[in-house]
Length: 240
Image (cartoon, rainbow, N blue to C red; front, side, top):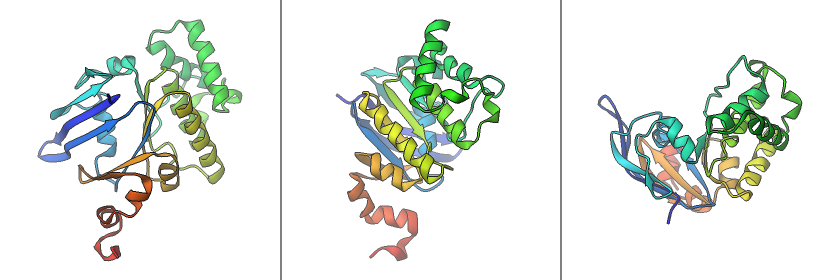
């Protein structure tokens, strides 16, 4: 049984269909990549899964339970965490306090939240910034803080929205290593990404969205040779 099932998901904004009858499954323990040109519906998909947007139609099933249109806090408590494409820290709290907030939000005590936050910051190489005010972090620091706060909720399913964007090669390699280790710990991951090195290296399976529709699905090698994908990204003239 799939850990996550998205069935016929459609999302309209007025007369504009951002998602059109999208179907996908995520198996427990896998790392699924989702790619597509800008405006293809990738982040909208995450926002529907996590309750930030109400679905126009369709169903979202997580761990055999219908979570369609539940509020974000209930979806988080059910075991789904996400990062945001643009990091959203509590700017005037410390890094440690930001991470603790994730654990507290799912019912941990203050002492347990602190213990968990310190462990996660160590895992992500962020412990030296524990007492730093979040708004002072650079891009890499904010990306890591997003990831740390999501991990603090002890997710069963982790949705990563462009965590590699804006990172230099050294930072990117470290981020990829941490993601691999998160997967090894038993967390199922769905990754939306434009950095092809990241998604094609880490993903076992890739889904491609274009103009709100799923146009391809397969292994990274299969996707890289798919004519529909090449046309969506580069245009018809690049098709061999």
